[in-house]
Image (cartoon, rainbow, N blue to C red; front, side, top):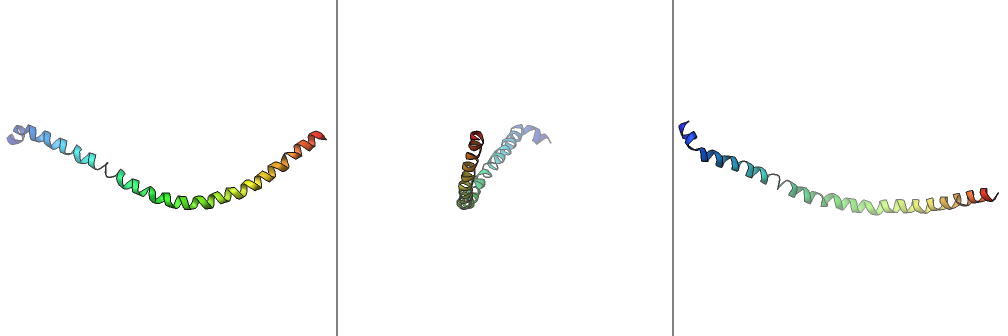
Length: 79
């Protein structure tokens, strides 16, 4: 017990050692997360082409419907 009290500086050294490893832990954690993001990004790109094709087909279909609706109200006004 007496040596512990006299080693006041030693206790302080132990404290800074704990926060140091704690900071290192969070640093390596985000590093492995970055490489994981690119992985899911690849599959997302592959799904982008097929997804774009779907809206493309719907776009022309919707455009035709809009054109038909436009003349409908115009005809009603004329009548």
